[in-house]
Image (cartoon, rainbow, N blue to C red; front, top):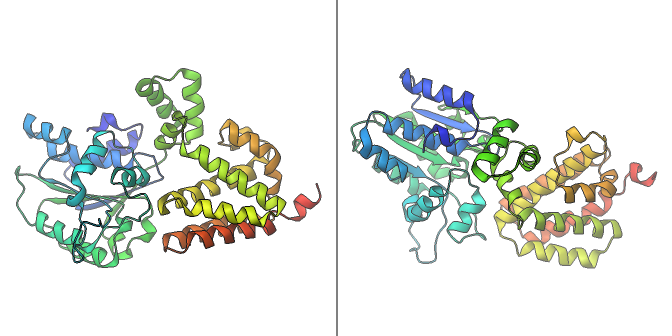
Length: 376
């Protein structure tokens, strides 16, 4: 893995390389940015740059497989039924599955990780056992006589005990240790951790870099590459989803359309069945649907301005928006957004999914009836 494998992000690549070359690396940094922008790809490439620089072919061979002894991965895990009651799951429990996934590429989602470990109906966290493991590992000398790198994916998923222990480790870092955190929701991290790390904000992938990657890596024609690059809006994983005809978003679009039609018809019996279907999705999938819900609400609102440059929708989404968009307007846009964000919060706190989604459905009946729609 090197910087050439990262799509776009030239500015951040140069910044990271200069930090290393000029020997001014912070002992803890945090890469933040939107989903699919390549934060993890940058982090992995930078880790390889640090550990492989001037270390010869043996180090490069280990880094190609991401099996370098001085590279320590931390990521969210789950508790398996086979684990004892007092065991706190750690990343090493799933390191084989992790390496298999990252061998397929550095662009992935929490959904893919949960599928990899067969835990789509659970919520993954980073336990206190992980911080204890890090203390143990990082207290040892570097096996290759250089830096040790702790690469933490989604530190916002640490539980409180783990976060407090990691804070102490960052405050008094072992010699020649670099912490690289890859974060999507930095506001959920302890303020004391955020204040002790150097934050690097990663932008969306620019459209031209996305288009080139689609043509060179995926073999798309110019027209298709340009359309998908614009639709992906800087998110490489979304671009890959668009290439998959069985994309999850197709299901989400069907569920969204169904909900809006049922709310318009005030068909409470069928809305109850709709919420029961949503209950069968895993927690992570339910949250992804709600994020998709927010995306389509925004797109339908912008559709009313009749400016194609403002919209990022597939043809099927636009076909539905043609008749539905007028129901999302200045009278209800904020309330609908608040409703969906509240549902995301409730699902994240393990609320009963059937109740959450039935409540959302019932409230949509009222929110779709606004002065703007009554005039038409």
